[in-house]
Image 1 (cartoon, helix red, strand yellow):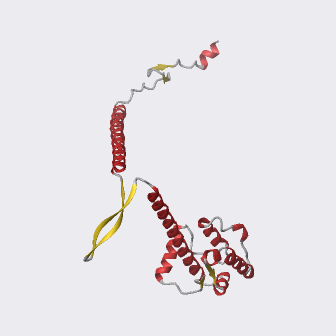
Image 2 (cartoon, one colour):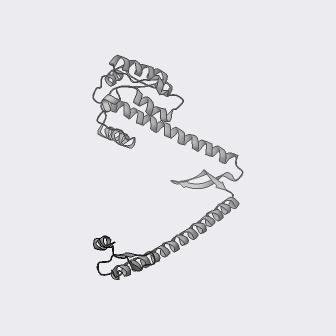
Image 3 (tube, helix red, strand yellow):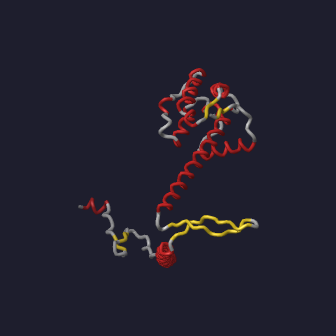
Length: 244
């Protein structure tokens, strides 16, 4: 089991931690305080090991002693299953917000994530090779290859020509479809451009020849729906009202 002890990280390792924080949208201002407790680490490892980590087992604590108890529990329930553990010294430094302790912890988490990705990629490769081995369309043949001054036999995966021909035809059909969509898109762009230019011309013509407004007289005018001006009858004067 690998024990994680406190150490001084190199400039390259610190840069790797800084880049990792940026990628995960984490700030560095409260780094020591945030990672003095185990909860943020539990949430990070939960993404890669959802069945192993239960964040409800690690409620956030405020006192140093309770934080250390949280780290010890996390050491036993999670980290030991990953074949690593935090040293007592590093736990004390983390719980006391010591300078540099959080960076050491995060660097180990980065290394752990890298190992996890490599294991997943290896598992995918193994499954793919097993599928190829069971498939009648993929064969393993030996070919002669020169390595230095010697000629050696190297295993090479080969597929049936009929399978290759089928895949080539499917790719060609997809290329034809993509070309057709591209031509349609280009045609629609041209139509939109022509209509836009025509609309701009009409707007310019309307701006150069505005409708003539009727001269201001005692009667008022309004514009009807058909574009014609119609006068309103003058309002009766007070004198005529008095004669009535």
